[in-house]
Image 1: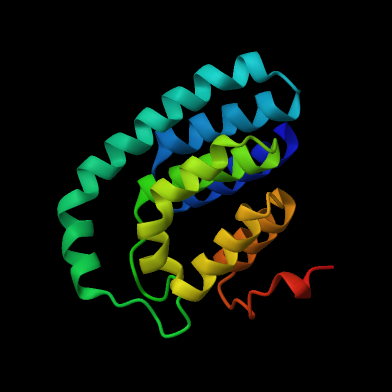
Image 2: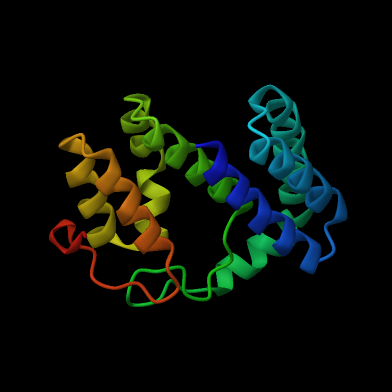
Length: 163
């Protein structure tokens, strides 16, 4: 789980660095290093600080995001399309993935909380597919469907297509 989190932090650092969010990039880099070192106790406080920085970014960008989101449309495939992705949604999805990775039953509650926003972002078919595997408590399949849903050019989301 820490290795996967390190990968996410690496991506966040790269993206935030590209757009000039230096504090977020620095914190993501620190969290990545702690995760790669297997130091969950060192990573946790950095992740909390990172979450606070992301919240500050979200609040600062809210006027722009509200305008851009109102103008954006979700594409016909039910993916993100040209829509602006809410930073809080990224945090919430990471939280859901973390719960699924450790097969924590609280992932079912978290999914229920996120389902309305996921309908908008991914479309009803994808959310129904994810709900179906979650109801069967197949958390690895749910993780796979989430990865496919995040794919910029997602394929059909069928559990039967799993490797």
